[in-house]
Structures are given as C-alpha cells and as structure tokens.
Image 1 (cartoon, helix red, strand yellow):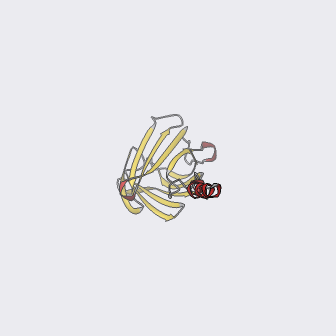
Image 2 (tube, one colour):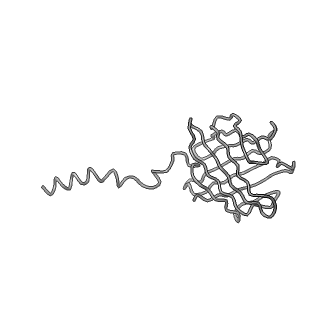
Image 3 (cartoon, helix red, strand yellow):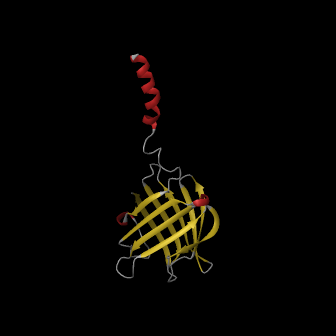
Length: 161
C-alpha cells in the first residue's frame, strides 16, 4: 500500500515540480515590464530621461502592445506612448511619441527585433532590440534623428521587473 501511495504521489506531483518560473514566462522574451537603467544607458544627444518604464504584452491577433512612460530629465511633461503592432514589417500607429507617429516591427531572431519609426512618413529612428540570454536585460540601440532634426545615437539598457 505504501509503495502504491508513493507511486501515485510521484505521478501526480512530478509534473508540478518540473514547472519553474522561467518556463511559465512568455515564449517571447521581450514580453514583460522593463525599467530603464539610466546609469548604464547612453544618450546622444542628451540628456537621458529621469526614468522610463516600458511594458510589452501580447495583443490580440498575434501582435504586441507596447506602452512607454518616461519622465524627462529637466524640461517638459512626462510622456505616455502606446503602439500596437505585429512583427511583420508593416507600419502601425504610435500615439504619444514626439519622434514617431508610426512604427514597423520586424523579428530578427528569438531574442532580437528591429523597429523602424517614422514621423509624417519619414524614417526618424531605427531601433535594434536585443534581449540577453538570461532574459534579464533589454538593450536598445537607436540611430536616426529626433523631432528637432538632431542626430540620435542612443544605447538604452532596461532591466526586467
């Protein structure tokens, strides 16, 4: 009887023991909430924002919904930008971003994607997003021009929350 109880316990509990927090995460490593690590980031032109939090969730129809809330360094009001897109390379609307009114997402591999942002139909920023192998860091390399027409060469480092 003891042996049968042990076997039943192992059969019932073993699958539960195999589930780890990592395996319960989204298969897309970019899904989640990310906080800008200002100390590790580089902004040209500067200054870097005081803070920025990015949240990416799966959206209906196989896409993503990205929300970015930022507090500027010393001037201007906080921004709240939202985009909903698929990784198909087609332009999708962006709301609340002074540097873009559309963006096109394209998957490169399981940990990397590219975003081409446009303002009034003209490319402003190209961003390459890389998620670290351990899934804890999101590095964004941006090149292009900002809303004032100044060259942009930024490296943004985000930590998973």
